[in-house]
Length: 286
Image 1: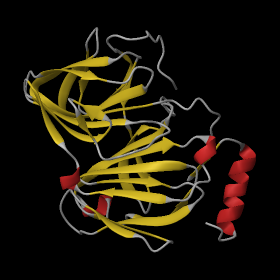
Image 2: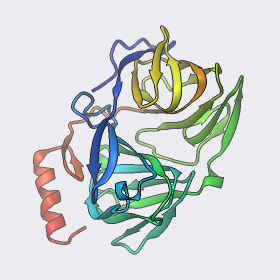
Image 3: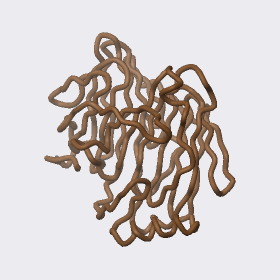
């Protein structure tokens, strides 16, 4: 799916909104699938967005045992809890509250993401970002970013942002992804706070409210907790928090406009490339 009715610049508006759907992945981890569901299969260059969040260990304790990826990037942003990742190249790292892992699967990686807790809240997001054809067979790599490496900026008027990727108010986030030039903000708005957030024109974008509610776009559309708003084009998004305030992620990226062939953990450009990915994985070539 792509944003429609694109003006060259100006205020963005919400062109589609809806809730995420209950799903499970890994070893029975319960989550909410926001992008990648039937009504929103993708939003170029974004392939999937999952929200996971539970204080019931039975909902997350199985984690995500070893599994392969090829042809795209995964972005894990932890709000609460601890997750250990390991891969078949010997890399290991800890995801903790406020940290980000931007993993480029490239030509292939086999990794696991397992909880390092058996009680308490586990909460966060995983976003899948497509890679252009020229980069799908690049070497795998990680950008492991600790909480103190993610800048936070006061935007005035009761609004602040953690800047994971892109830039706002002269503050640039640590994540680099040249092909899609992403913007990824975690926005915190006090009750009634207003914000006009700049977004690069031409980027496809969305917001997802994970606490409170917000009115977004011009004309304004109310988005309560658990709802995504897909945005038209433009160079800014007007936001106003509800009476209880709001917390939301605002994400945008440059579309690739390339064919997508995907199945399970592999995202390529053609069916033949998908078959090759399965053959390579089975043959141990990842």
